[in-house]
Image 1: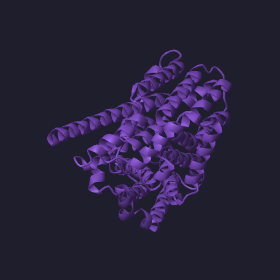
Image 2 (image 1 turned 180 degrees about the vertical axis):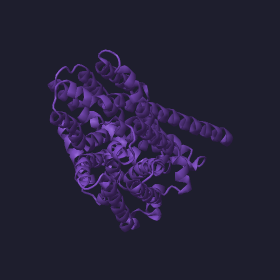
Image 3 (image 1 turned 90 degrees about the vertical axis):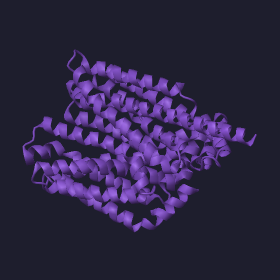
Image 4 (image 1 turned 90 degrees about the horizontal axis):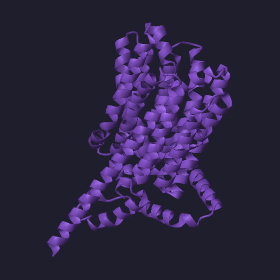
Length: 450
């Protein structure tokens, strides 16, 4: 009898792991399709706006509109996903984004084009919610590996999208065709999320099943506190009024934003600005310093993006080598980022640039994954959706500041932006070192084992 129960429990545990792997693979497809669709639009958008008769200033304002909306909506939508559930919020964001891209495909004047950017700017957070969902499904020590693979799958979509868009633009009305294709891809994505099992029910099922088998599979413990919180949210939120939801979102966002996690968010901001400064005038700098043609520069950027995909798939191996210490990985990745940017800014040979960007592709992707893991580990009480949303808002601040800082730095020298980026990276390393007591191995490892 005991043997039969043992076999039943073991079979149930294996089935649960298989179901979770299937769920993760589905989310990888969602991430791939998401960035595949977006990357078809991004390279063509400014050209389309100018073709409608917009001045450079007007084109810049329309482009900035998206970034500003993302800045304020990231944390709100992320917290909203904590309240109403990941699946519902993910489908909503995908469908509203699909509407925005379809409207962009109908834009025959500047007003409609600007109007189309509003729903996308507010609700284009499908990747953030997918990451929050993944963090709910896996163990904390497995999170860097799973996040790395999700980032890799998404990046592959960003690499392939511009290639497809290049062929479509050669057709008559190519931009409009590309927009409608992107919208159709988003609708397909929403259907994929719809047919997947309810994530909340899936997680809650894991609580029971994995508790039954914890003597057989010790590593299969899930985050019971977070999952139980999600269970209560799903149980109660249909009875909440709109006011209750708004108040709850406000409390969660302000609680996390004004918590003692300020140093983590500041490190993220500094590292984001440093990398953006490195890439801000890359094509122009390559032309001025090495007389490199734009096509060759594009090949180098694609090469760097491809290495970023490889880095995502290596996150699981690196996490094991570092004994699941995300802080140590982040520190080493940031130091490598600093040296790569600094070397690039002073490079006199093209092979030095290629070598710098080879290692920079690895360090930046590893660093982004580790900083998200640290945010979710330290501030788990605020909800993964809220934390990832605030992190995206911080990155949006960097996207606003980086062009301004780059412009000022270029007034002095073509190498000014990467040199300033190296200084920013060095400042983040110093801040991490000063705050190491809170986030070094013993502290984080204790949290991960709770």
